[in-house]
Image 1 (spheres, helix red, strand yellow):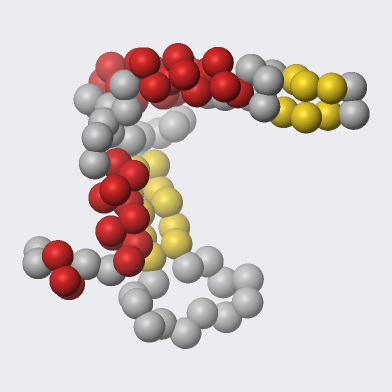
Image 2 (cartoon, helix red, strand yellow):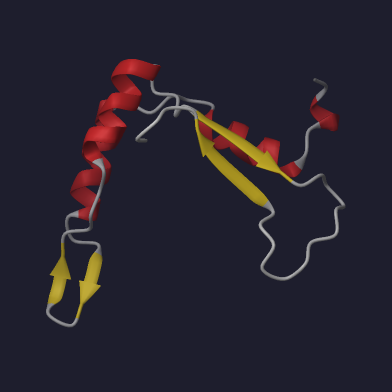
Length: 93
């Protein structure tokens, strides 16, 4: 597909997922999220699905097994209507 024909959503997703996720990035996210949740009692560990992300790296070469659908550029969007749908291609993920 010619770059000029890509929708803005496609450009964003290509930029986000150009490089596959790595174990080093998962480790970094886990360290960051250990103190990212602010509560009335102070900082708490943020719930992070580490096992799922490790599976993405090990079984899918760092590429999340998802399908992303969006409305065509220029579509009319009504309030509370989803403009983007993300579908897992693997059950239980």
